[in-house]
Length: 307
Ligand code: PMP
Image (cartoon, rainbow, N blue to C red; front, side, top):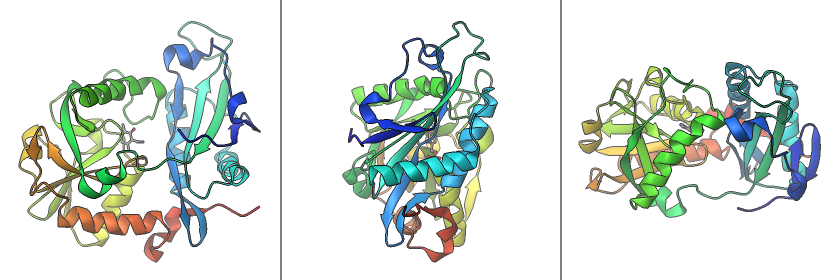
């Protein structure tokens, strides 16, 4: 991991190595945290944070879903992110805001534990590798099912929920694949461990519905918008596992992975075994949007003010 100089913690910029918590931090024991992953890109217009506003909105929504009052406004968090990137002198970076229940209360009722906020930013390359982004990755349907709304809140991005993704990720890596695909409790296709999923068949684009328990990714919504603008037919519906095997193209979207094609699923080549034309077209427009080169999507780029 590429360290930066400073981390924002509860309103102050502290040295990277001093950004510490007490071992009795509630979130460390029970997973009572919510977080975001955001990316900022080096562009001609400056450092451009992709859909910062939507990420901060989801962060606050996740906090609310787990009864965490945030001691800052969304505007203050936005300013803190700008200050942190400027103070670290990062032209491009991954940004990780985290809101969590701190130390002081043990047991399962955290309501009296302090709510703490930290934001880190560091330089982070392609999550599934540069080659993964161009050639595509190999994925495996996980034996683990995606958490359902019967036990947790899949729409929230909450720390404890990620044990589900961790199990699927480790399983896929140990079996020699780059990513795991989780089905929902009904057996329909849900998503990757940290990415939403799309498949293409006969020129049409399909993606699972939000009600199936996916995290409604910000990149998912962005790519859906781009697909419609590019004139593709886009269908949100339940997708059976077998549809993965007969798809012409499959790709995933997420902040860390951006738009990554899947070239092989459960040891079967997807289509020709190389990223297909729909994936490549969407990847190109999406990349332009991320890097503030697409006028049509310029509202998605939050340019960090130069101090
Ligand atoms: N699903 C899960 C489980 C995730 O962790 C992520 C990453 N936040 C996504 C989907 C994609 O969401 P986004 O496009 O907002 O990064």
